[in-house]
Image 1 (cartoon, rainbow, N blue to C red):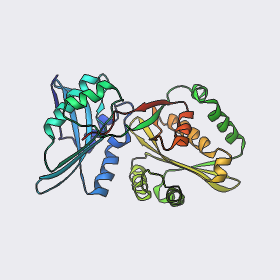
Image 2: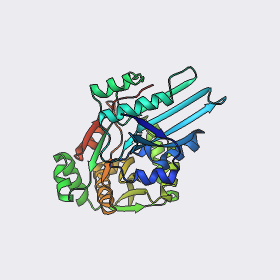
Image 3: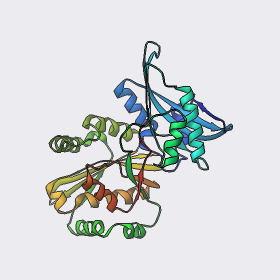
Image 4: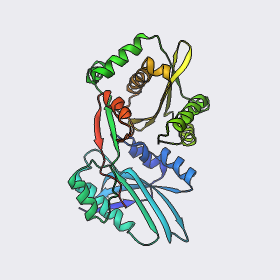
Length: 313
């Protein structure tokens, strides 16, 4: 199978194809790429993948180079993405063979590849055959929620403990307020920054979240939920919409918010709003073995757990 990558796509052309792809990832969205490139002094490029001459998928990369690319870095995060009818293991291997041919390993070049490919022996073997070496660390893990079933079915899919928390929150008299303007989320960024510092967990920096919010506001992809209990701000979430999917970018809970399970209510109300605007799938964002509580919370909503095939050089 012959794979080619045409790097001449404009952002608009790329996004037109992006809209056709189920479960499109945030890190492959052109808006996300533009924010990263500006922040990190990189160049973003958009590629059209053809298999035997047929349009098959798209890919976004970030590059940085010095001395006419004698020193060069290329990053591919959670891609490529495939159009309906494509994306088999053989298609992915053909793509990475061509990608490795265009960006071969050499002195002065750094490659970082996080393929959107579920963990399996076949995936690891294919990446090795195409010249990529896996780093010794676990692959990225997340949960996907299919939002297309009726709301009743989504509630039945929840784990009992999570559904009980949601029922509790619905009876607590919590007020939920939705915001779509990045300029109005300074209180959320402030508490997130403090919480991140005190609890020492990873995730996106507060400045980066603010930058993302500003850009996704322009595309009407920003959804910010704020919970008020007894008139006091107690919990918040930020959702980012990209193509036919959305990502749970940030969540914060105060002690009082945890007491009334406000975050569960916000996330459920967010699912309802996403369904209403035609979003098919919600990516609940990453977790790892060191954050078992976060994993349990995300698992409780009843989605499909995925583990990707790791990071490659």
